[in-house]
Image (cartoon, rainbow, N blue to C red; front, side, top):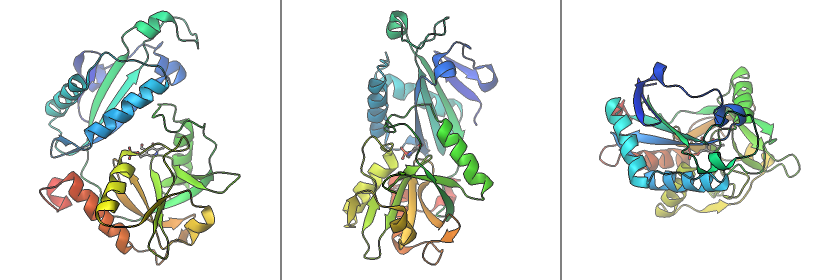
Length: 292
Ligand code: PLP
């Protein structure tokens, strides 16, 4: 992580940025966040991230005093102060804290200024490298479309994935066996007739900004897409499998629960979409190495 953090009106060295022990994000995970990719100092898909931020805040009745222009200015100041060329910015908004531990949102918390934190994280753009995925039953709540800091299920699932030598955990509905999404990504597969499938953008998944961008790129490249849930069985028989997220772009999946997808190599469609997504982030250049 880079060294300067914006925290409630001040730019501070990261070890000096602090919040109250009564912060509601600390007590109740009562906070909303965003992760935005920075490509050559520019924000990728800022408008879509801002729209989702507002939608998540509205879903938890958290109103903010910052206009889109002010938020953008604060983010760019964090980018500038940290000399962040490539990587991502993390933005979190917590409901104002109070000195009583009360689940209910009091009038002062409703009216009070929420806490805002913005940090910068240096990272080169991801490579088109195959990742392993495990599958787990989806035991999360039914409002996954809210980008909330209540991420304990994601934490435990990613931990389990790591212990099993995988990078990600993908969730499936216990009743229908439908794949919803990953712990921190959206799930995609390519059928044997070349159709791309991904779960519809409803309350069972986070409406990924990378997912949304890729849908547009598929349209531009005239690739057929079905926003329709697919089962664990269909996933195991897919021609290609990949994931999307702000930090992993379009990443191929080589193994599902230790079983190879296709021949275990990066598929043609996945490679094409990775290239298109990379170009979307870095329109003036095509080589990822030049950005590292
Ligand atoms: N689904 C979940 C549960 C996530 O946590 C994330 C990203 O963190 C995504 C999907 C991908 O969203 P985005 O493309 O906006 O990064």
